Image 1 (cartoon, helix red, strand yellow):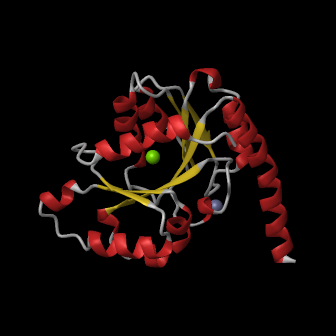
Image 2: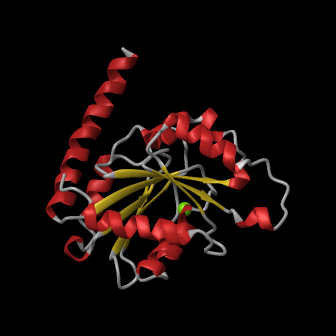
Length: 222
Ligand code: MG
Ligand code: ZN
């Protein structure tokens, strides 16, 4: 019985994901679903990313949080269009919630939509939102055991951003072996792109920015 319930939830979600995919295809929009645990720096990365894409790629943001519009306010400082979804306790975004949010974005004026999912390394990775790719974020402050503990998201993501690398130079005592993480993640996912960066210092943003610009131009019609 339990399995049937889960299947029903996922198939209802899939029908909205399909509608969202059609909207992205019609408007030639690259949609990215950004997933991480709380505090990895997703919103900080987004603010820096949007500012660095100005004049090149038009970005819209969907912010998913359990409560508050704090992150949407931070995004608004960039002047990018942003819609906040509050899940009121829900630990992931659903495709239906994203579908409602899309009605509030100027789709004909956007090249890329980035969805900042609810901070959670587990279930957001199985609820498809209609995105072209998942972007996983892991900060070095979280420790290097996360790919082993939560393999699903690292196996499904197209890109992994390893944030807060400025902490290495700051001499912080952190248990994070970059080489070990890269090796483990590549074992789960041969094709993943890994960009170590710092949203604080903007170190490493060049490659991530290039990936975004290239992907926005070349993504296949879905
Ligand atoms: Mg955030
Ligand atoms: Zn959940």
